[in-house]
Image 1 (cartoon, rainbow, N blue to C red):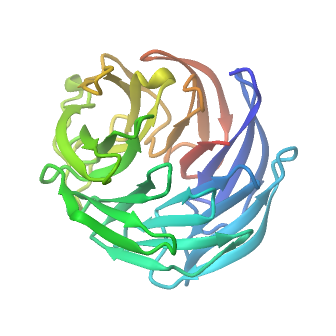
Image 2 (cartoon, helix red, strand yellow):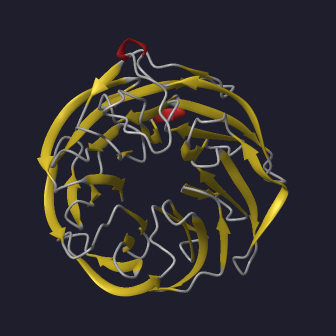
Image 3 (cartoon, rainbow, N blue to C red):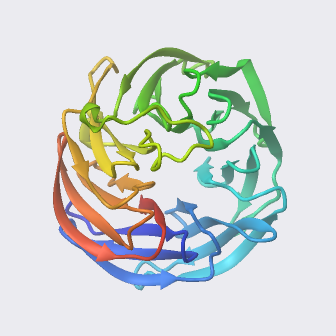
Length: 342
């Protein structure tokens, strides 16, 4: 990566966001903004240099902060309360004028308008157990919510006023007990991939770009077969049970690989993606920061930054196909679990 960029990391254990400058070979920590109670995720409006961060507390809410790209400083400029419960995932769409969120503990998802630095009250809500993430098509016409507790992807048309209308089939099933967690489109948006928490699979869904409808196709394992991990279960203790604990998923360069993280063994691995969208299991597993709930790849897919819930440092890697080369390791904060290049 030749152009400098910023990397933001949420440190849920201390309620802060760290801002780093990345020059392609190293990370320099510019700032750490405290006072963001339980912050575990955020969405970034790069055009306006705004960060919308989910915070816990009584009540929980979404805090909006301005980002100074030179100093890395974040300054709070807005807040919306969420008395029903805090968000575990946030997503911006329609030129960052609409914000969607998924709340795991409270089991609901939202759409909300964004006007400058102001996030409005939720317009529309959906309810499923243990909602874990949400994404929209790039045109902002369709929204997809993943329910880990109900093993499904819920699919909706997103109207101009941000109301949600179920598609012909409101939900598409994932394998029972798999625990679908995070989702990602391919560039053409005719395929949606979902990483599961309890089975450690990458699920493949075909997507009709006209109707938005998903159709389950197949899946492949992303888990190291030599690790002898057991199937995870909702409410279980994956560390005590030595169970699968899948977490995050992001594209590598050229969309030839999908990088995934697994927390019990603290590994990163690359699932191969063929030209037809089909998948092949990883051939290598890289031990990274302890319990990597979150990581991110750069826009060109050639850099990767990984954080660990049980580590106070982040690692910067160069990505070459399905291989990683460690470039730098830098202090961030406690409970780091969300990473984004901006």
